[in-house]
Length: 224
Image: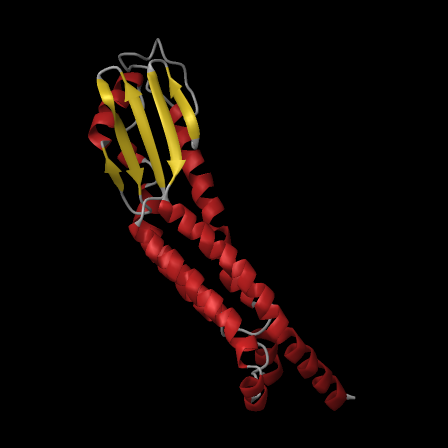
């Protein structure tokens, strides 16, 4: 059991080794700490922006997506989308918005746990945080594609608008409506978290792999 636990959690750092090379072992912990704080704080910042230009709105309409809610001119945009047969924006990613804060808290705790696991299994704990930015983009594209390709054929302007896939990032639009979409500060904070976790594992491996190899060699010597 002790051997299994050691292989999962990894070897502990000897007190003397920790005193002489403190920064070697503190560096990955600090990087993981900064990364998970970035991810947690990203909850309060926008992940995605869209500006819509329409003839009846010369100043434009704005939509801002946070991980757990939508902000901006949601009602007005829903009104325009109604004419082309697109469903209300609030129906998109309802489960994701409900679960997102708890999911980010879980990823925060998993990255924290990775700092205390001194073996290769630490990567599995941090994998959700690393892949989260790609998951967000994939989910956003899925819902925009689903909404754009499933227009209501009974809508007032259904005959003049063919199904389409809205642009996730950059310029887009349909008919007389023009859009410009960008990724927000919150999203880039999540990207920063993922990048820092990857960097953290470089220092994590440098610090703990020699100890892991020493512990493995010692077990082999005892069993020989």
